[in-house]
Image (cartoon, rainbow, N blue to C red; front, side, top):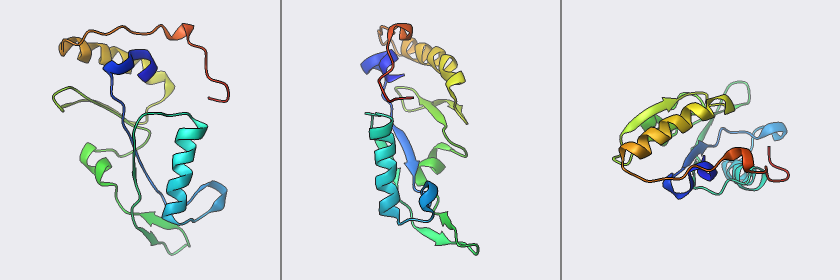
Length: 138
């Protein structure tokens, strides 16, 4: 979406540590936080700000970990992820899309056009059919 709408759109991502990392099992919060940074910025090439909550973990009876609640997620009512929260220029939540997938992109783009138009923000939308995917990115 950032490529599509350029500097007329601000994207911020929020994530949190969960207590483990893939095949490594339970890992220290700092290790998991670094793995998340690498995953999003290096593997997926994300360049927008990522709010990373490294909450305390509590061990479970089965050897796992339960993460502390993420206060950002609580503030925005995030109950599943990925989830998109569209906030207008006045800070009002205008739409929440739980369990966002690629199939939702056009619906989000339509809502973004509406919000930009309502705010009187002139924009030029890039034709994504002419954008070549970056090598190594999915």
